[in-house]
Amino acid sequence: MSSSLLILNHQLTITSSTYDSKFFFQTKPKSSRSPSLVTEDLRSFISKFYTVHSTNSASFMGLSSIGTASDGMQLCIFDLRRGQHEGQELDKILYFFPADLPFSTQLSVIGLSEGLITFTRIFSPEAACEVIEAERHSHVFYEAEPDIWMVMIVEKSKESEAIWRIDALREVLKEIHSLFVMFHGSIRALLEREPSGGLTRAHLYPFIMDYLRDFLIGKKLQLPSFRDCLMERRSVQMLTVGREAAIEVQTLVRILESSAGNLPCFSLILFQDLLVSTTLSPEDTINLFKYAVLRLTPLALSSGAKSWSYLRRGNSSSHVSIGSTLPSTGSVSEQFYGSHDASPAGDNRYHVTRPLQHDKWFKGKDGFLITDIWGGDIGSLNVTTPTVWLHQTEERMYLCAYQYKSLTIILLIPLSSILNGDQGVSILKQQLLENASLKILKVEEKLSKGWGGENAYHVSGYRYLLVDGNRDISRASPPTKVTTLSKESLLALNRLREEVDAEKSRAKWDNPGREKDLEVCIRAKNNAWAVARITGGKELYMVLEKANETLLYASDAVEKFSNRYCSGTFSLD
Image (tube, rainbow, N blue to C red):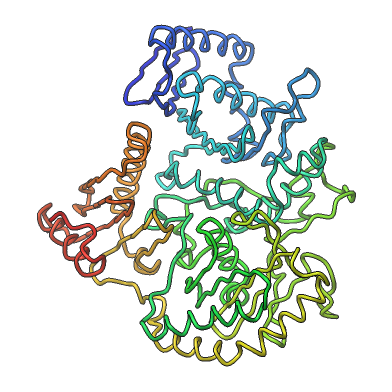
């Protein structure tokens, strides 16, 4: 066996001639240990690692089955605190996709992930591994909760379409966990309620299955690719309103609050698939906005919720296929769990709600949205009121959704505030209709008159993405306009965003608490310019595709855009 090491710019690269493999991972230089000791630890790790796997080189890194069993992607969740004794290794597996892989393969993948997490803490005790780049696979790590890890492994294809941003894939993991907690509470809390892990698995498996269905095109999963580089997942898209409309909206918010009487309540208002108003914290706003766009807005109800956000309503071919397949027949349990005894399939001990199911929300005659996901019978209108867990208040809330034309209003009331349960919620709904109906009609009319349609935020000659990281807000060119960009332009922008992601990560650890201003320009093969400007927590990404543009011309175009549409935020003056 021969291997080599290279540490450069906080990345560690290991190359092995024996296994024809090369992988690197991000490190955060927080270790106080001397370089010689760290290197010795590293060499010891490599020696032990290859010794363990030398008996079967075909299973190196536990990845031999990826190209066959899962055909492109694996996703797992495991708990480092569980399965520490011999014979109990399976206890640490809380979720694995695809579930029909042999347990030996699942344990191999999770064992490798656990080893890499432990090893990389030598270099950065405060922040462990984020990504492993092997020759044929990318491993994306996310510590969702203390000692509870989510890992996505995606296969690198020779097809030029299989190009993605690691940060975009990690955002998928973050979104899965955030939405799960909003409906079911933390994973750790579920494990504490039932230490065997059965309750946790019974919730995780169907939830993630329903989530992944929104990435399903035919029988293949479509993960975010370079064609999605003008989108920002963990953000909300807001509607720009005039002064008069804003006053009307604020009046409506006050009426909604007064309709609840002395009960504490929160509200979220959307027009089409855009946020108009929120009284929630940023974290709760992001989660509830995503769910509303996914299942509650008029578009979601009418189209079967095929898009995750209004930004995804473009051509479905804009998403790269990585080949992961789900069976086309059989129940959800059969598709996800296969025949493994450890899976919760067929286990009726637990009552599990599946809030991400399709076609489960309906508009009632009174305008309120109803569902039988939480229990009850739609036909008799005797249904259980949905509930969510708010991060802001750390308590469970009733979710009441009302819809009038293009306006969707979500009201959240603490369970502890309503003594009579669903009966009390019905009384509250009636009070809301009596007090707010006229104002709801007026607000919807105002917003409709000022609405410019799906291309309202198109700027001629520009394809852009604006991100306000301080408020978790984004705005972008309409999907139909983005699809006019050439593949070379999108690849250049994707590469640019990767560079920006890496620079932001380095700045975060080198200068914690300090925002770094940054400008990056890339000339694509087709002579288009991809430009990024970062300042004060705000980000602007842009593609300018006129072949005759020089760097000076491109810079001038960005200045004009900044001055006209961003109040000069990204201007260099």
